[in-house]
Image (cartoon, rainbow, N blue to C red; front, side, top):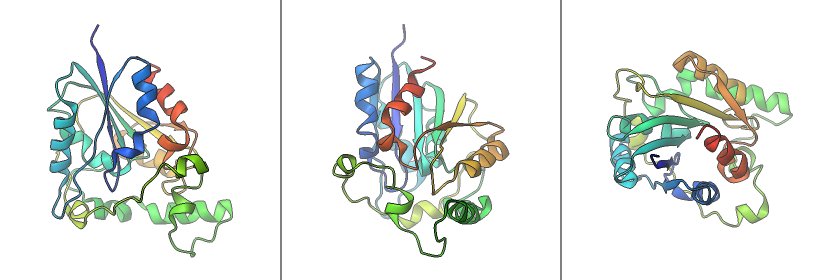
Length: 225
């Protein structure tokens, strides 16, 4: 039997710490795991991120790439360099050919979707962005204590165009947090349909559900393997 590896790709800021609760669950179930730290130096591009993904994966027989949020810009670039059997997108910024991460927000209507969701759930949409409200709201105090301050992604990442002419020809799964306040679930469903022709599967938890719902995420990842 081939040994499956889960290569875990973070979002903006590039910290592998996002996966610190998921990785042990997969490892204990017998899977090889690798949580990637992505380059965040001045001038870094998604091609640099793809290089880091390939280097971290090493020699392996069968790979599931799991990409969180902005990681969806980098993971597809590694698909022709690794034996990828599955690409899993989690609360993802799904790009289209030629799009930059800076353009993605306006092209997808993310701000309007977040504002509508805030109004629906009784939050003031004009209060300004706050990490506690949009990223950390469903994390327990013990999990919050594990976190260090995230780096802001470098500007060059928002200026780099997604270079592939089409989505990689690999099975792709879209997972979306039911309680994501940053990329609301219905917004994610629409983007997955429009851009990939796929249905987003719902998981419990918010934008950082790898930290708030690690058991549910690990169980979904292992379900078909």
